[in-house]
Image (cartoon, rainbow, N blue to C red; front, side, top):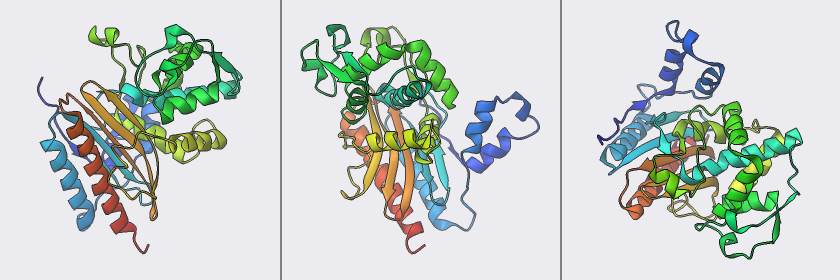
Length: 312
């Protein structure tokens, strides 16, 4: 397969194109809403901004595999994207919109976070977390399962939550949230279906859009957004975005890992203000290499963010 063409795009340009007379009529409401969430641009005399653009583009061009990057300084609005609309296997990144769908189901009265679900053998799936080794018959609240699904990336907890809501409901909610290219066609660790070509997909754009909604308190409700943000901050898999960042910096994020794909998406709460970073990869043969790549991108963007916001 030819390597996906890498393109560094400026979001203001994307917005002007999407709202032009020739294309506006063809865009749906969700596309317009999502385009409007991305703004800012490197001015011709902004050396730091342009240097970051070039460095991210160079790193992506040299990467052994395919990569999508979305960075946004949530204080200044400056945004850099590479392959932001390219489809990538979501792996465990899909657990973030699943969490959002759970909170939406609570808002609708479809369930309560205190409701208990019983662990059954058919839900057990290896991977992150400990429920796979837990005896069947034990019950767990939905909130506890959501926390396990995010913080430990527990696939058994995920299977229990997906079974509670169903694929149809989840995909409907993903669309209602404004996620244009995120779907769920199989279980997160249903490798048989994956080998048959049935894949769950997302984009850096979609993940960034969802995370910014949570950050702004605009996803479902301000309270639900804050609860989801707090859960994302409990993440225990910290070998990517957090790796080279100061230990005291809070990061609300979610990783994704499957054969050939390693990703991390999240919000970094730096002392100078928060920024958003999504790095998604696939067609990777060396997981350590991919994880280090994400860590280095995070360090680069952190240092840039610190420099431009120091003293402001």
